[in-house]
Length: 269
Ligand SMILES: C[S@@+](CC[C@H](N)C(=O)[O-])C[C@H]1O[C@@H](n2cnc3c(N)ncnc32)[C@H](O)[C@@H]1O
Image 1: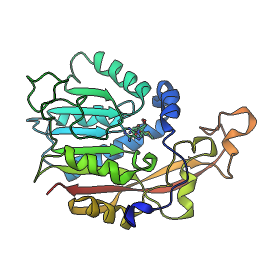
Image 2: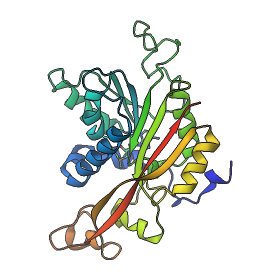
Image 3: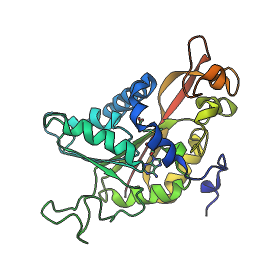
């Protein structure tokens, strides 16, 4: 393992699945995740002018799509939008949204999977006529997105390597968004009760750029994409007091803090 991928983590294992399955049904009730996905969508559209509603040509893969907040906003600008999440509960919510969209989101394909192989047979085949369970080559993508996911992934080197293999050689690009690790302040992003499955308190800018280069990406750019205000605990465990579930602030609790979000870009050579 390289120096770049050896960044200390919070010590958690990939136990986030249980947490996200449990949270799936209520995920969309949190206004913060809607605003965050809207910012991510706007930042991606601003950087990728070829994403077009008039003549959508992009095949896009999203890793960690959750209930599809980013997926359903970006999908109208794409030809195919493959939305993958490791938590089946999240994918079930997204499937219901797609099924009830009267065909508007028919280009969105939700898949429950922890992707470790670009040729995973659960991914759509390169040739639409091939049976999806066959060993024929899988579709390669113009763009891979992921929002608020990187800080949950124990082996980022491994996931970035899988992403690289899923992109179209020469042209396929990454656009990953997550909050930045700016030091001790960044730990405040999660309340004490939401620490399960948190592998790192944000993404360190230089470390991420080095890791992407090490994995094999070119044209790597890791820059601030937007900033967000978030209500955070004034002291660790504040949101758990008074019978709260610790995950959201009740009236009068917490204070507002500002968090920069990174947009991590790179291209498959
Ligand atoms: C904080 S949630 C964000 C969900 C969604 N992107 C949003 O902003 O609403 C993180 C999501 O990433 C998923 N996840 C974490 N690691 C993953 C992995 N290696 N592959 C696929 N999904 C993953 C979790 O199941 C969870 O749904």
